[in-house]
Image (cartoon, rainbow, N blue to C red; front, side, top):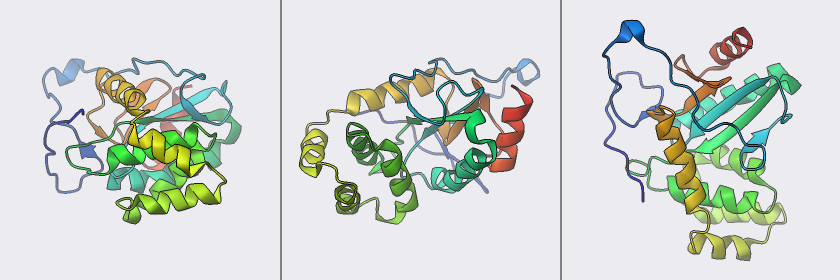
Length: 205
């Protein structure tokens, strides 16, 4: 299982960090770009597939900063409506978040039955119960999903390869913590709040 290095503490952190960023050559620094293009046949996409604006998040369902960013993304979606496609990719910080991988697996098991976004929202809205998978399975049952199938797939780790692909693609793209956003293919290093994201999205299109 992938395990990133220990987290550095900061006085007012806005994400969970994978490791310290290099401060060399800041004068010539260019923001990292998204290495793995959005793929409509693979990625989880909310909004029109051919929308002019693209926001990609590399996130962790147990990360408190991803939880704080979740309603901000909802505001961005509400503001930009059909102009935006929002893409969620997995970046479970397994060295600090014990349940991040299992939560990602649950979301993928729900995705296999056509309900990724419902489970995505549930997991972020119920982070305080993420250590109890029974809550997620009860929600899945309320959606009419085959929970027996989900349990079997998760026990067999059917979706871990896909989750690892997301993780490695994030590393290649310069993800150094969660949440990390890419605005129209370029990493967003501003605050993960609606105002900043909307400004970045609309100024780079």
